[in-house]
Length: 305
Image (tube, rainbow, N blue to C red; front, side, top):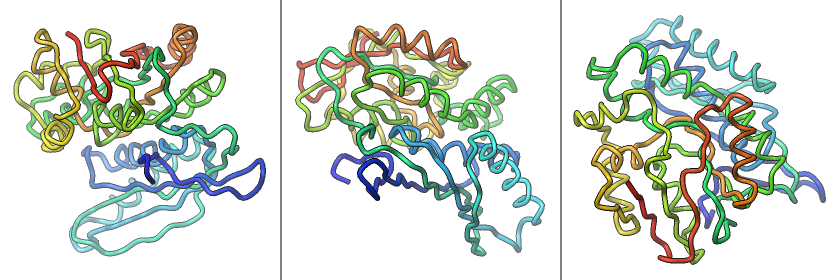
């Protein structure tokens, strides 16, 4: 709890532990089937981020039965089931309540070896920071709500949010990763800040290497900003330093709240290129080194242009 890790871990033996998490939210896309896919991928992600293997899941459903037809719920659950089957996770039940606002997600249980747990802290000076998915889901979804997002940007964003972090987690298991987390509601800045909090380290981001979703920078430049982005910027402003060359849209995107974002990995510098190559060769073409952990300035996230 003190490190704000992604999931809870409970040891049940010398070489075995349970890893548990839950997540649910309101719809962020129009199609119920896509919403189910995204919600499932998002719920599974915290297990992958800690190096675990998800095994079972339970649905969490809040459904306005007086406002929406049950077919909407049926399609949401079918979308979630598609992702669970892809992840080889068994749906074992769940719980539903009648609620004025639709919400859906999953409680997930997996297994992990106690000696292989990855937390969000453990990086050392000189480690490279690797990101496996591009940023921009919050901004593109805001553009979608405003009727301004292109069909191509929307499709790319939905597919990225529905993409499991399973393969990325399997790849990282073959490398000496020092710390890991996933990028979700706190944005890149918020989750990176958790990786250095109280460690005596800082992070220098290479702003021109941060991968972005198609048209996300354009929408940010138009002012299509989700409310969560402003909250993230205000909350973390004391630990963020921006180079004068950083454009406002990049400042927005590093604070953009993500849904089912990529993994953020601290990797020894000598292994970073091989890790990125493996990720790109196996379904993560956006993966790259976006920064490095530094001893100075301590506790600061510096973004270069």
